[in-house]
Length: 218
Image (tube, rainbow, N blue to C red; front, side):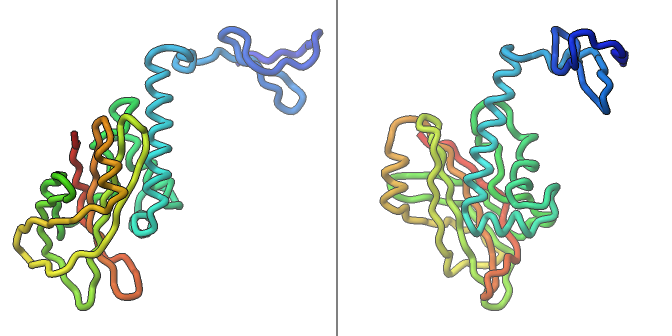
């Protein structure tokens, strides 16, 4: 890095071509701008920027759902805030500039005590192939369904409680969708459906959760 000692035109700051000028303690330094930064306007940089914006949108929405926010807060994932954990964990799964079904609404758990095998939407119901091996006294099983419209670029979600679950046995959950969700998925375009189960104790503390199940509808 070369230092500019004589400044006939005053203090130089900023970028000129591939040169970057910085003023530190009254002295101006000049360096070459790395080529990897000179990608503004290229197809690749546009794709990366769009992917970044979509990941922000996804992370913000998941963070706005209280029970999912509590899950991410309780998980030892890089970052201190729930939003940062959601963003950090999902950034390696952004494969394009669009939100995809490879993203996670809950972080993976070390030992899978609850498994979501498949999710499908038919008429006004969500059908989930599910199994749980987890049970503690008076625990509460909550489900979370998150829907994303690829055409409208919008989210909607539905939450509720699950009853009469059988241990160590795969079962088909039949979840009736609310009117707002039915209307949302009835619009044109493809939808991505995410599903997870979160277990809490009576005081609301998160005990464990399932994997993220996903499904592309329409």
